[in-house]
Image: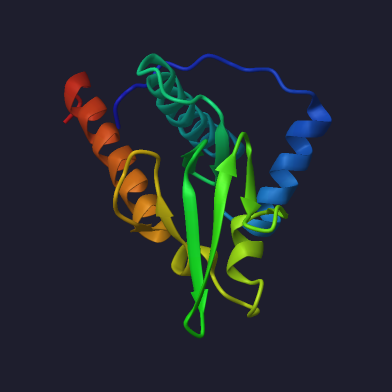
Amino acid sequence: MAFEAKKPIYLPVTDFLNLEFHLMDTRPGVKPDAFVTELVHRWLAIEMERLALRKNGQATRGFQWKNVFLPDGTSLRTSYQHTFEFANVVGDRILSDDGESLTPSLLANRHAKGRNAWRFIWLRFPGDDYWVRADGCRTRFTEQQRRRAIKEVDASGLV
């Protein structure tokens, strides 16, 4: 195992203990420092993506759906029994055609219950002519993160 330099980050004791107990209940074996490190990596990746969008002159507003950022102007589509329903990202919200503010899950489950929004929502990003399944966007992001991590390890010479 290679040495990895670390720097402490101080949290209020009650917050740290709440996190530790929550992890014990929900993710046995996951240590708080590893969990926080993973959260920071995810957050940085999202912020870097937003910064890249900002530098390219594109919209900086949008809706953050787990690890997928939907910029302002993104269209969402779902269907149920051959009826299509659409929504758009406006500012930092998702609005249906009738003006109702929704989450992706609410959009996917307006006419049916228990549907996984990642599987039943299709996305069309601003400037694109094609629809992409939301699950595919999530998978692509995860794969990009994995490749970046491999490059970082290779660049550090630890492999």
